[in-house]
Image (tube, rainbow, N blue to C red; front, side):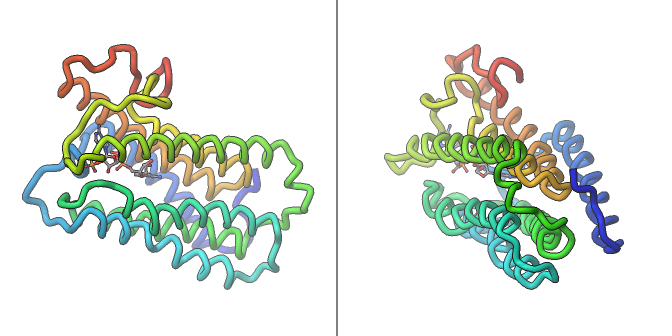
Length: 257
Ligand code: NDP
């Protein structure tokens, strides 16, 4: 792995603290199971419109990538440009497409969740885009033929596909303009309750492998820290709310968990 190099002490200490914080967050979310979003929400918290919330939460990514990456001190490099393009593709969908596809019109999202996600996205984008714009080694074009890139890229694409397919199945459950919940079927729902979260985890693990760098591994770790507890919470919720919920379905990892 390209260890954190260079003389940017602020960045280096920050990244190590960032990784430590992901582990603390994971433990907190697993133990405390906060009821802060979607079906778990506790009413009467300060909140805003759900669609606006999603847009605002993810917006910092597409604004800050050009700032940290394109203004970096390193010369443009086709390989790092491709890493950043993959990151941007994901977030262009999250900012400008996903919020307008979900069917949660009248729903609201707690301001606390929106603020935490904005802070997360600012730091995560800083660590990734600043690294590839200023600190990363000079990846040679042959990186595209390396096992890291090939394996990581396949995982990234497969993960993005699973994530998108599963989100689409969930969104289509509300075709009739209701806001309620149904048991989802199809795709990887055959095996797990939250294939969208599984897909997202695979996607960012793939991204970490294809770029083989510490800030992208930190992001993969954060994704697991955020989504594993969330998937377990959703899974328990399904069992508590649907008597006939498929018994052999796991939470997020087929046959395992
Ligand atoms: P959910 O699975 O909770 O919900 C996705 C959408 O489908 C929501 O609009 C939800 O409505 C609706 N929905 C979910 N289940 C049902 C059901 N059984 N019946 C009807 N509608 C349903 O996903 P999240 O909101 O947690 O995440 C959305 C996307 O963002 C995912 O792709 C996830 O991977 C990604 N994400 C990534 C994170 C990261 O750290 N990288 C962190 C968080 C999310 P409602 O909101 O009303 O419940």
